[in-house]
Length: 127
Image (cartoon, rainbow, N blue to C red):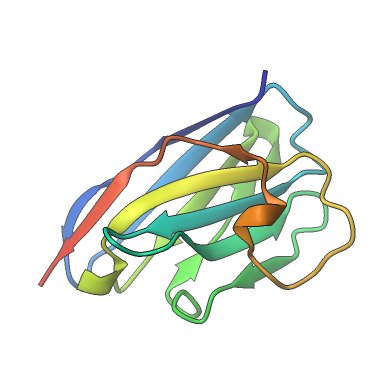
């Protein structure tokens, strides 16, 4: 049974940092494609960052470039979202997602590409 358990959300002031954790189980992590998405109230879910767990290829949404990174620890089946220089507009529920077979790499982060989802920690950034 595929499980994605996220931790690390919380409240922070603008300019601060947070690290989200996503512990994956129930599938072979090395070879999967992992992603982070977020959804703010009244808005559609949007992709933030994605990584091919085998090659380490990454892709970021424009809003995340230069501020967020998506490191991973294959030995722990864990992917992270390191968020720096946070802004109030980063406030949202953040979701970890998985596609069990990464397939050919394409630089996009689409919700339709990820069949498995975590429950999502809340991130709140105050000004």
